[in-house]
Structures are given as C-alpha cells and as structure tokens.
Length: 239
Image (tube, rainbow, N blue to C red; front, side, top):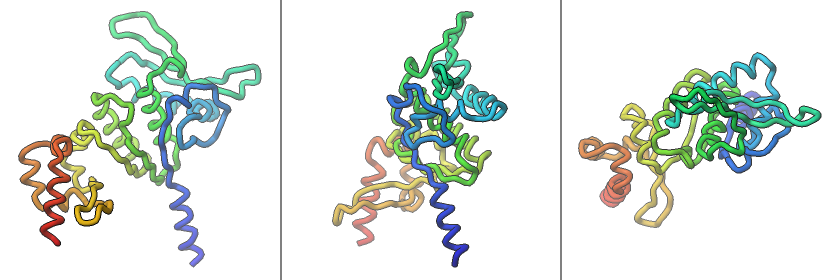
C-alpha cells in the first residue's frame, strides 16, 4: 500500500504545468535550481547550473533557437550580473544573414515568441526524465511559421529525455505539422449538444474521419468547423 502511495505521489510530483510569461522573463532573476511554472526565472536557472552542464545546456538552447525563421539568433546564454553575482540576465547574440556584424541583446530586447520558445525549451531540458509537462496553448505568441520547428523540438527532446508532453492548441498550422501519425494521440475538446457539458473525444473515434481527411488536413478541418460539426452529428445519432 505504501509503495502504491509513493508511486502516486512521485507521479504527481513529476507533473509540471508550464505557462511561459515573456513579460516576466525580461528582468534580472536570482539564481534558482528549479524553473518556475511561468518560466520567469529562466536566466537564474541557467546561470546556477554547474559549469559543464551550463555549457551543454546553452549549446542546446542555441541549437534550437537558431532554427527559428528569423535566422538571426546565433547563441543563447545567461550570466551573473550585479556586485554580488547572485542575479542573472538572459542574453542572445544576433547576426543578420549576410552581415558580419554581431549584436548582443538581453531579454528586454527579445520578442515574446522567442522568450516563450526559450521557456518551453528550458523546461524540456531541465525537468527530470520521466516527467509530464502540461502546456496550455503551446503556440501562443509563436508565429505560425514556427509550428514545424516547435513540433520537431518537442519530438526530439521529449523522446531523448523520456518526457511526456500534454498540450492544447487551436492553431490549424500546428495541427497540420503533427502529421497523420499523431492522430491516435489527438483529443478533441468539444461541447455536448444535449446538455452543453464539455466532452473529450479521441480524434480517431470519429467514425467518418477517413472521409473527412480525404477532403483536407486536420488543421483545415478544425478551421472550418468540420470536426465539431461531425462530432455533434455523431452524438445525435448515438442518442
């Protein structure tokens, strides 16, 4: 019985709900050994890492952030600031394609989308293996052109670090980037036409899904309301 309780407690402890808040990521932050749920202390977490681990972490951050469509971010890192060196600031080095000039920008000059991307990435890289990360509206603040990069990052790091990711989205571009192989893992949140209650239905449980997909991608079907309309009809027929 004790082992079962410990297992439940351990599982719950490894659930991390993440909602990056770019506005809170722009200030100086004290060193920390645990990322906040709003990712506000990214700089403090990175700066507090042991030297070699910090070097590797910043290398991975730079690798993924440099893939963003802007193509100008070459390096991402955090370093101590202030007289006592107990606070930290997040920095990036930018170099415009075709130019030799390099520009160092701190978090105050970074876009919301870039900061949110860094927050999600830091959570994936610092949470314990076997964790579950929950991210609501994961693409919030991210340009649609970044959807593919975001999905690739989640797949690569999630697989490598054995981290499960539960995310919500309304973004057709992101849904299209998931691809047909992810259909078994997509759950549709919708309202019951009978009593208005919220319901969760696996996408693959939609009886006419093959016919729907023949007429368009998942993102297109969601954008046009085809998925919800089909679920409403299916619910009426089952009743």
